[in-house]
Image (cartoon, rainbow, N blue to C red; front, side):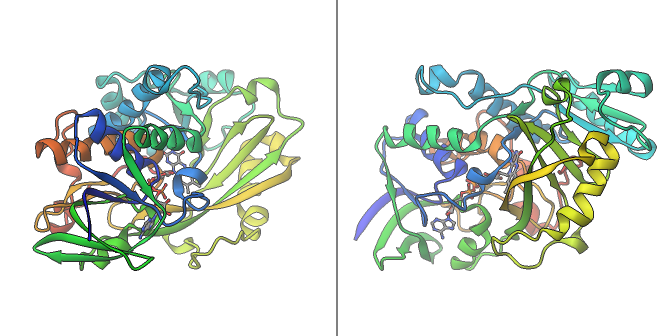
Length: 389
Ligand SMILES: Cc1cc2nc3c(=O)[nH]c(=O)nc-3n(C[C@H](O)[C@H](O)[C@H](O)COP(=O)(O)OP(=O)(O)OC[C@H]3O[C@@H](n4cnc5c(N)ncnc54)[C@H](O)[C@@H]3O)c2cc1C
C-alpha cells in the first residue's frame, strides 16, 4: 500500500494552496492532491466571480482576504514574470437602507482599524460618484476604493496548483471514496479501488466537503448551494459604469463589469434556495426576479441582452455561512478548509497557509483562526459574517 504523508482531497484553491504553502513553509514529506475531476469544470474555484474585498464584519475574514490580496500584489515574485490574473481594482459598493446604516458604520470602523480604506457615502455624494444608480430607498453605500475588486479565479487556482506540483506535489486523478479512521485517519480509498495509508488528510473538497467528512463518520454542514450567474450585454451603459465597482443591492442582487459586458447574480433567501443541485440554469429567475430588480436600480439595465450564463455550486456552510478552518478536535489528523459560502476564492490562499502551519507547527502562526475551527460546531456557537453575498 502506498503511503502519503499529507493527502489532500480536492485540488481547487484550498487544496492547491495547502500543498503550495506546505512546501513554502518547509514541509519535506510526501504530498498528494486527490482530485475527482482534473478538468476542474465544476469546481467552485473555476466558476467563481473572483471577487476580493476588505468589507467583512469579522477580523478573521478581513485578515484572510488581506493575505489573498498580498499574494495578488506579489504574484510575479511568487509565480514568475508571466503570472497574471487580471486583477481589476475597481472596488465593492455595498448599499444599505436606513436600517442597515449602523451595521455599515460598525463594519467600516473595524475594517479601517485593520488597514482598509472603506468610505461611507450618502445622498449627493453617492449620486455624484455613481450616477448610473437609482438610489431610491438607499440611505448609504460603503465603498472600498483600494485593495478590492476581482480577478480571474481559474488562473489563480491554476498558478497555485502548478507551483505546488513543481515542488514535488503529486496530482492524483481520482476521487476519495472512503476514509478509514482508527482514532485518527489511517487510510483513504480511491475511486480506482486503490488504498493509500495517510499521515494526515485535508478536506479541501469544496461543495463536496460534507460528503467527504461523512466518509469518516463526521458531521460537517457543508454541501452545494446552487447559484446562477448571468452575462449581459448593455450597449447603453456609460463608460464610467464599466470602470465601476462590484455593487451589492439591498434586494440581494449584485452586478459588476466583465470586459465589455456585465455579470449579474443574486443571493436567494433560505426559502428560495434552489432545491435541485444539478447544473441546469433556471431562466425564470432572470426574467422574474433579477432583471426587474437590477433594472429598477440601474435604469440602463432596462435594455440588456443575455449573452451567456453559468451555474456554480457554493461550498455552503449551512450552520453559519463562514469558513471552517482547523483540525477535528478528536480525529486530530483530519484538517478542514471548508464552507466559505461565497468568499473562498479570496480566502483560499490564507486557508491553505493556515492548514500548512497547523500540520507543520501544530498551531497558527500568521493569522489566529481559533474562532473559525470545527469546535464552534460542536459547541453550537455560530460565528456569523454580516456581509455575505
Ligand atoms: C458563482 C460563484 C461565485 C463566487 N464568487 C466568489 C467571489 O466573488 N469571491 C470569493 O472569494 N469566492 C467566491 N465564490 C466562492 C469560491 O469560489 C469558493 O469558496 C472557493 O473556490 C472554494 O474553493 P475550494 O478549493 O474549497 O473548492 P473547489 O474549487 O470546488 O475545489 C474542490 C475540489 O474538490 C474536488 N472534490 C470534491 N469531492 C472530492 C472527493 N471526494 N475526492 C476528490 N476530489 C473531490 C472537486 O472536484 C473540486 O475540484 C464563488 C463561488 C461561486 C460558485
